[in-house]
Image 1 (cartoon, rainbow, N blue to C red):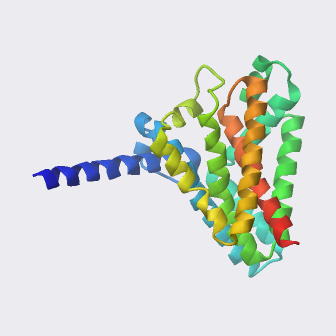
Image 2: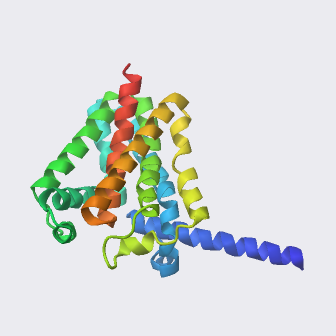
Image 3: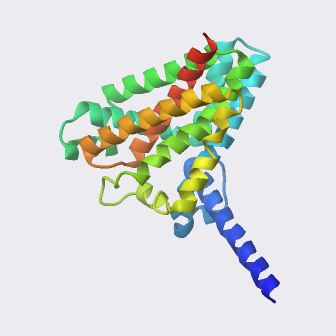
Length: 262
């Protein structure tokens, strides 16, 4: 009987984690998911699987890059890979980057920053930031040899999401309420470990020295964003996480390009 109880407890735990994973895919991608993805308790724990969702998105982008490179030049293949990842996520993180650029670049007071970030319209700062971020990612991917570029795309997505989601461990939510607050609420020790172990180890598989350089860059970026968000708005929002993911992904591409271009 004791063995049966242990087995049932393990089964219940796996079912619970499966619900959390489905919720993560339902929230962070446009991949069709069962209705359980909108369940409130599952949503509260979905943030731990943000990097694992990134592994799926990055894997799809890497596959498209490899296939497209068989038919077209590297610039076209890189553009199609970026388009694939944006379509899979519904450009969720790009939207956060644009909103943050508009709010943080176009306002001074905390209330004005949060108000502008909530506005669905894109302004000059948002447009410029979005074009620069997309352009730099596009060029960095295209400048790398195709097999290497595919690997970097694969690892950049989960690692950048680990860096982004780690902001919620050190900052309060900047608004009174919001969906991003619920999605990142369930972060105990286990959840943090899952978010780190499913996102960061991929950096070291190809070249551990380059992986160390990428990790140090991500830590420096995280420290800078923590200080910036705390000073400007006193915490984080969902848009802040989108900005952090985009900058972390770009940082990984630039480190890889600098490392292998030596």
